Image (cartoon, rainbow, N blue to C red):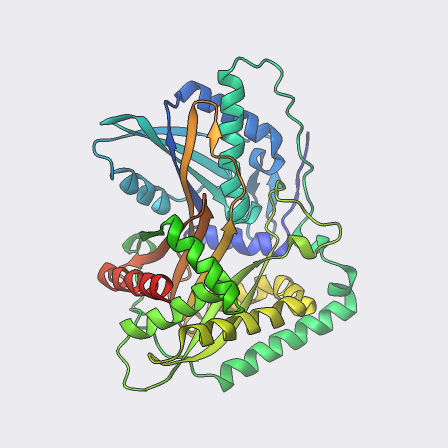
Amino acid sequence: MNNNRKLGATEQAMEIMNRYDKYFIVTASRIKGNLNEETLKQALDCLQNRHPRLKSRIIGSAELLHFETEGTPEIPLRVAIASHPEQWQEVLEEELNEKLDSSKGLVRAVLVRIASQNDISYLIVTVHHAIALASTVVRLHSEILTYYQKISAGEKDLSIVSLPALSSIEELLPSSAKGVRGAIANGLFVLRTFLKSLLHRPISLGFDRSNFTNSERYNRFVRRQLDKNCTQKLRARCKQEKTTVQGALCAAMLLATTRIISVEKETVEIICHSSIDIRRFLDPVINDENATVAFSYATGFFNVSKNLSFWQLARQVKSQLDISLMNRHELFSKVMTYKLMTDMSLANPKIVPDSVAVTNIGSIDIAKMYGSLELEEIGFFPVQSIVNNNFTVAATTFTDKMFLNFMFSEPLIERDKIEKLAENMLFYLVNC
């Protein structure tokens, strides 16, 4: 089926950033059981037949970008052998730094086998951000393993029903976000954003602003985990303190940041970004299965001191997020102006202030067992090489365990600093 169409403005922005350097989502899962390469390849073929955008590629100049179905190859599967149990992380970092050529396809996969452990494998899937949110890409692992289970069981009729190819997110927004009314709202949002940049003076977080070339930057990550007991305690305490897990994560990130930057001031102002999935705000609602880039964001300015109460700050974050969620018009304006803001940032990177970012997809409700295979762990790693001046953590909760991935690029920031950030953040989450 032909699902060709012109890219929407948000999709265009993400493809431009991907061409500039890298802009995609990498997910990784730990699987117990013997994964057969050929069966896995068949499962990937089934996945591609179900999701129309996985059968697309992006072609054309920056001004005329569009999705093209014809000529898209099957999802490539690479197999890597790890000589020791932790070497899968090296393979993952290779994926974080391998450009995604969107003219050939928008998804790729790697199967990592552990030489010393025949029953342990890692599945790494990379998807272009222009076609999916992190939560959707994480769920693709469940679909792959479901197809794998059926193929292994000898099922002949897999009954693959292709999902509909969605329009761009701009077209899916309500009519109030478009036309003259929408243009006025978007203009006012840009004006408010500009005024905020004049009124606020967020602290520098110590990033090296040297003009490193793309080839000189290397994407890395630091991985941490909250066990089941700590994750459940955190949820219960958040409820008791009348805040949310997102509020707690942002508060921990903000306080952890103040402990690793050298400042003489007692109180500093820090920007915190939260990603927001807006699929539930659309009419009709887009379900979790459909791959699309339906997201917005909330930006908060927080005065933080090392002695500030953790829960007080968590409630402040929740309060600001609640205001953002209630203001649907502004959420939609952020979508409609995303490309404009991206173009401005690319033209003058120095105008973008340092910040922290917390992207949390919450608890993933997918199966753990798939026949003889067990999904033990899963997480995601946002690759946004062009965004060089923020501390980013990506959070996923699966089987009541929280997985935290701290993203950074060398030599813009030292690994030791990120290690300290991660340890400080865990200290607040565990001891709150």
